[in-house]
Amino acid sequence: MSANVNQFVVHQINLNEEGKLVFIPRPSCFEISEPISDLAAQLHSNFSGKPSKGVGGFGELLDPTVKNLLDSYFAESLSFYDFSVQASEKLLSAITEEAMIETGYVIFSQYEYLATDYLMIAMLDTKELVTVSQDLDLSQNRFLELSKMQIAVRIDLTALETSPQDFRYISFIKGRMGRKVSDFFMNFIGCEEKVDTKVQNKQFVQQLDTYLASQPLDANEKHQHRDSVAQYYKERAGMGEDVNVSDIDEILPKMTESNHSFSDYNAGLENPLEPKFQADKSMLNSMNKYSGAGGGLSISFDRKHLGQKVHYNPHTDTLTIVGLPPNLKDQLSKSSSQDNSYASEQEGDTE
Image 1 (tube, rainbow, N blue to C red):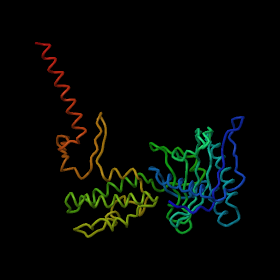
Image 2 (cartoon, rainbow, N blue to C red):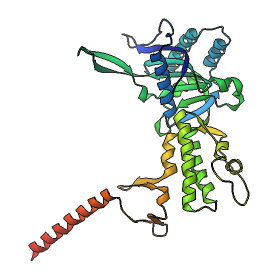
Image 3 (cartoon, rainbow, N blue to C red):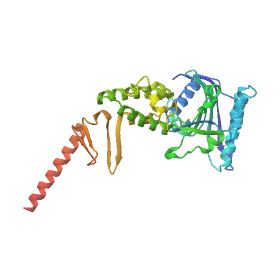
């Protein structure tokens, strides 16, 4: 991935000797260099790869501080550095108001990727690692924990300028188990959620199943169409781009009886998908496989095997598998042999 970085700066929020949260600003923005561009690209990629994100915009009834600062920056009455400092001071205030102890490095990155302008604001922790130099000297250094990014927003500046009415220009990472670990961060940004991307992705997979099930296609044809959608989906997720419902019309055949496309089918639902939504990589597995776990069992198999190698009987609630994987068969055979051997020994002892 190649990102054209325009501005980049890092500040810090930390505890002082008295245990009070303080803001520590960097003296100026970084000069744009290859390492800075690589870091910005990695931040973009890590953010895009997060499976649970929300989408929204600046809420009319929420704190407008960051929005106003951003407006001032675009009006050129405020430099990017001053914008980042004043926004960080607001972030510190938001953390303090929530009576939280949240420390870390606050990153502000304005960049262009695939002809779209973005502003990313992220709060990251660090970890200390021991490194070895070419002269075999050891030193301890701090590294940003990019893979553990949980508190971050990405503002699509192009969408904010061209189509703010869509209210889809702010993306943010959501916490696990349905809980937003970054509520204070959303309050700081003044962001109101419109779309839960995880819900959208699950709904898309369900609608894809229903749509294909309604078509007079054989199992192989359905599998091929599903594979084509999964490939498109994977490409969009890899680029950090939205899935466009209209694009699916170019992949799937129209409904035979009504001649409706997938977009038409979606539009007629009581709860249709958004015209576009962020791809969730974790959903790729659901497109290609049936899987489930519980009661000590974990089962997963390719969808194409249902009705061929795997048969489901809903009346008896059973799965019949024809042709076990060799490694599983080997384990079961060994276990069966051991059980038979033990049973024979027991019978001998009895006699």
